[in-house]
Structure formats: structure tokens, C-alpha cells
Image (cartoon, rainbow, N blue to C red; front, side):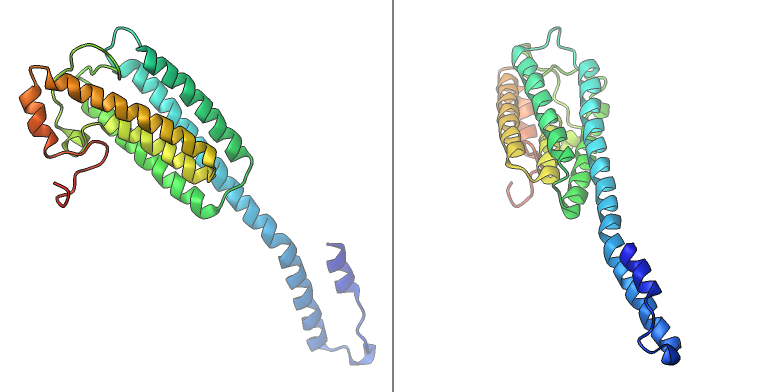
Length: 230
């Protein structure tokens, strides 16, 4: 700002020839200097706002998962594997918050992460609404499986809850662009895969075995089965 004021006060080289054109040139140079100093601040302010929005949406997603899962499933007790998974997810969430607060991001990655967070929350709520009256069991519950759900997102995915969780950790990777979050995605992805296969084996020995066998032919595990892959 001091440089701008000095530029505005600068006298013309030839006072008698100081005309309107000279004043315009001085004004343009002053505006350019001011713009070069304020533009990075304005861009950083915009990026910081998007960063805070992504962090807030991510935390709201996690909080929604915690509240809904606690009330949604009918398991009498929380299986041990789920308890360890909850602890690990809290550590992963803390890592996500820390990395986001470092402000090392790109605006394109933040926008992409925001879209993925929105998609995973929409899938989670759609799945929860579809199974509200089914009283499903939690992952790793040793009890017999319930009826085969084939409505809502289950028309396309056999495990939409797990798919939404995977999308959540994928969004964390995209937002932070840090390899640490890749470790959490790999760990939880493996956990969800094991849980999904355990549930499918339970169906194979249940009264719903034949129905589930036919259901598997038209649906994907964590993503829709395209006709090309059928």
C-alpha cells in the first residue's frame, strides 16, 4: 500500500507537460500494483472457505453415520471387530482433520471431494431409509441373516452400506491428497470386504440361500454390475 501511495504522489517528469494521458498511465500502474497484491489474498480466502466447507461436510457425514448406525441395527451387542473398526475410524477421522487444517490442497481436489462426500451420504441415507423396517444385523454379527432386501439401492448393490463407507474414505483421500489416508482406505476396504463375504456365506446356509443366489446374479458387491460384466 505504501508503494501505491508513493506512486500516486509521484510528480510528472515534466510538470508543464503533465497531461491527462500521464495521469491515466500512473493510475493504471497503481491499479495493477494493487491488484497484484490483493488478488492472491482473495484467492486464498476463497480456497480457505472451500476447504472449511469440505471439512465440515466430512465431519457431518461421519456424525450421521455414527448416529444412524447406533440406532438402525438390531444386534444385541456390538461385535468385537466393529468395536476395533470404530476406534480405527476415529483415528482416521483425526488424521483427516489434521491434514485438512494444514491447508495443503488444490481447489479442484476439494470440489471433487465435496461431490464424493455428497454421493456417499446420499447412498447411506437411501440405504438406511430402505432398510428402516428390516432391522438388519451389524457387520460380523454371528446370528442368522434376515430376509434378502432387493429394493432401493439393493437393486444395484448387495452391500450399499459398505459402499458408502468406502466412498467416505475415498473422499478423504481426494480432499487431502495424502498417502496416509490411502492406508485407511485400504484397511477399511479390506474390513468391509471380509464382512461382506462373511454375510454372503451366511446366506448360503440360510433358508434364503436360493433367493440370494439368484439375487447375486444381477447385482454387484460394492458397485453396480454392468451388463458388460454380467
